[in-house]
Image (cartoon, rainbow, N blue to C red; front, side, top):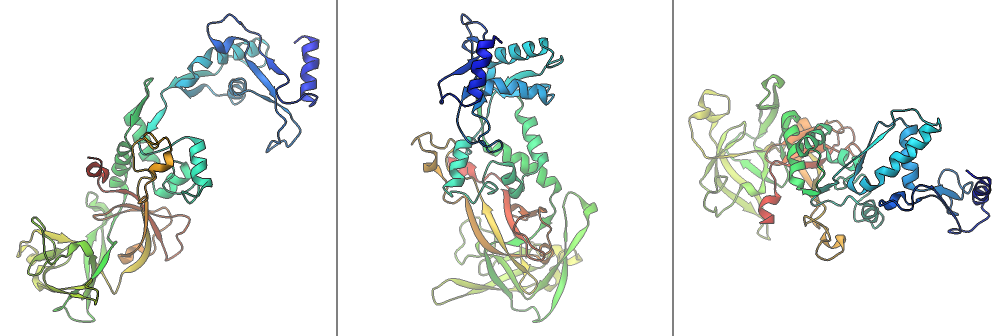
Length: 413
């Protein structure tokens, strides 16, 4: 570098010039058809407080200059970038070649390789937009389970294996395109289906009273921990006179094809007995407070009489006397449209007001001591994880990771 230029650069470094007064450029070829090789700026003056060095520096390197040098210092072999960096690659290679010729780095040098950006529907990945979501409190923070961040994915219960399956499935392309979020959810669902133990949870509970079952009596029913993995054994589910069932599992006026509880109809209590509905109780406002039924004593699952009565309906339950009440967060997609902001120009207009619902659920007793980050399939409902931030010993809080099926298929049509 000529002495005059070096002296001027030192004055820039010493803070003798205001912002924008000078830049340092790499002398390459002003006639190059690639604008990035037309003597690009590599240092500029900026009087700003740095989070590490404070006010010590007032000159800073341009990103395209710092990028290849950092890669070489850190012994990066392949620098993977998105397609907008493709026309920057000639400068990347030129700079590293010059530094290697000068003895600063040894060959082989890092290689820059470009591929198409991953565009996911129903998600924003722009850092500016994510910061806005956090700063304006549209989400609970960077680790909000609806956020497309690693800490958010961890709290949501997304698995590393699910991410790997997703990347293997979509592959690498040079063509820009959109990947539907359901593809990612399906990969997570497939992994959790293989690994997550089964448990029972009643998310919208109403009392089911078995009038002919002895008061104060209970007995054990047995359910597999995983139906496809018998080696994982079975667990005990207590059965008693009063149970919690899903409110949607009873109606007084059943539509066509409804095979659950309604007056006169019989169903099987999963892993338990066949029961026949006899009626219900209501409060002053007309809301159903309890459903009544009678059980058939010789129809317990796993006994010789289990198949003596044929029924079409099968519902799940937990014993009211043994259930554990816990907080459950039902997470869904943060945005209600595939490409947020496409129509209005403001991505916040497409926030999904139903992206989280907090409820109190009744869980089978085995879930009371769930360890943080333990994942389960709540039968009929989906896959849930014990939140590692809010779960305490004996008091788990569960986040829904993904439903059993893609719940957006019908709503999008």
